[in-house]
Image (cartoon, rainbow, N blue to C red):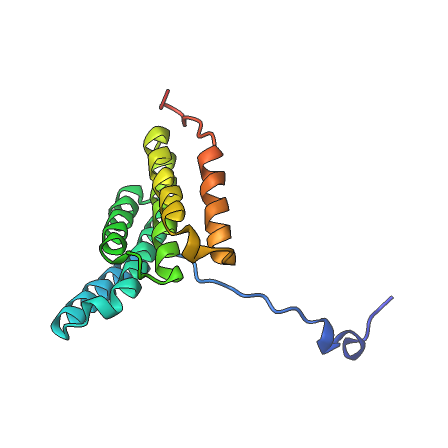
Length: 168
């Protein structure tokens, strides 16, 4: 029958669920303003190089938000800008996080290109990620994050994107 409220309120069985806010156009607009302000501040303080990896990552994140909102052209613009920022700083002295950030940005860009039905162009973008991994193979080693992103690249390359309605 009935369950007494006191008997069923065992705190050890309460689950915690992380809730992420839903992306909105307003959130995207605010992040774009933040990104522009961050760019201005780092240039004024002459600390572009120090914050360049963070700035590149933020740019890619704004692209991801636009992709989630279905704004593929805006997403593509931010991914291309993030890639440009990463490419300007990735070299033989780069840390693992920065190298993987660039590879991830290539994958994000490739995904949007594939979703907008340009699979051959997407393939070449994924190949750029693989080339990056090959160039920095010794430094990346068995890093779990590098292993994940490399596997993600190979998975994305193997995807078959079917044309949507009206795109045959």
